[in-house]
Amino acid sequence: MLTKRIINADRVRKITGGFSFIPHRFLADGFLASLDREEIILYLFLILAGDRYGLSCYRYDAICTLLQINLDEYIIARDGLLGKDLIDFDSRIFQVLALPPRPVIKKKSADDEDQDPAVVAQIIRQSLRYADQRRALP
Image (cartoon, rainbow, N blue to C red):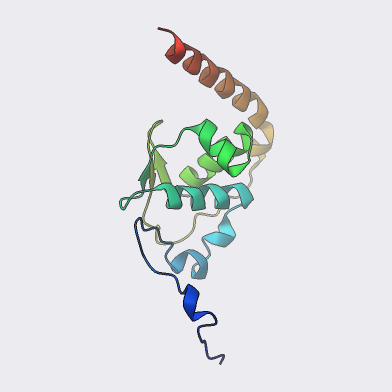
């Protein structure tokens, strides 16, 4: 077995200010392997952005800009994390949840192939633009 040793004693991580963590189970129990690339980066972002209860309130446009993903990728990743029971979302606030007993692995069905996410994403995009325009009105 490999014996671990600190490589750079001047740069050992310390908890200061905010605190975020990912339980080791996330890797060891297969949660990481159950996610696609965009789900991983969104999950990591939400962990980093969250307070001690896992709550954060970044808007979709800021998240897309920071993560360098488009709206479609954001929506698919968000919905994937919701479906895998890793986050909750009430349209304003995200909550990173305690890990469920085991990863949720979604299998593709014939119904999944019949749905075109681009159409749904277009409707959502239009709704979000409309909401932004309404907020900008005096």
